[in-house]
Length: 300
Image 1 (tube, rainbow, N blue to C red):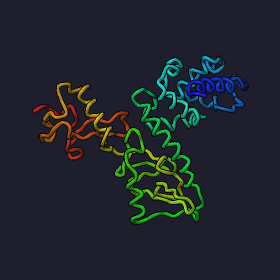
Image 2 (tube, rainbow, N blue to C red):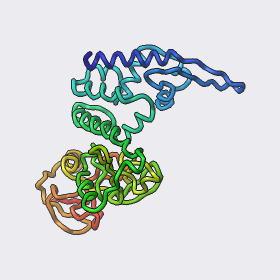
Image 3 (cartoon, rainbow, N blue to C red):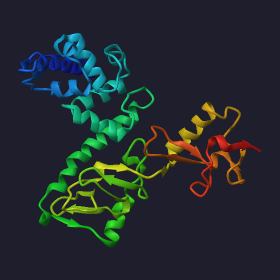
């Protein structure tokens, strides 16, 4: 079965679950819907998609196809069926892991932007395979305490060094990030996390600072502090800054920051991801000492 055949089958499975619909009318006239679902928790997904009563009762294969497409980051079914082979491969992979609204919300949180395009499909697929593989490894956090070892000293340091920006496709979490654990609702510096290792398997995991009282892992973290970006994400943001705002700039343009008065090449500017922003922003080379941004850079 190829990717598109699998995806078409999932639309039919979605419809089958939808057709198990029963409804209850309360004494006050409120109508609630119930589903004996097997493949997808359609009631939960309909709440996520904010369907009204009329839409929830209007089940058909075409509507099921539409919601399957939306689940995997496409606006409509035709966009999905006409997608590239890599996009379809990613869509199939995600559908094998999506069952309810929580799955969709989790994917949206870890990627920042779950919409699939020809430009990001390969990167998102690599990350999806990595992320869902990690979820299996994440189970180490729930092992009895006597079956794991909490690493310290050089062992912990070596494991923490392996954690880098590639753990999230938006490159927003780094070792110097100030983070919030959504399991215990506590905030701390990422480098205060603990690292545990299975006593029977060669598996390690970065876990909450408050382990074992909290069984959260870094997959449950949210970044609270601005984070300086590097590598490909930094390059992409600098190029976007040129195309969107400073069309006369090149990477080698010498700029003057009107905030700090210093000069440098545009390619030396910092790129900063703020927790509340969808995209990283270009800032002065001397950020955070200087808070100058792209609009404050003047060509020398």
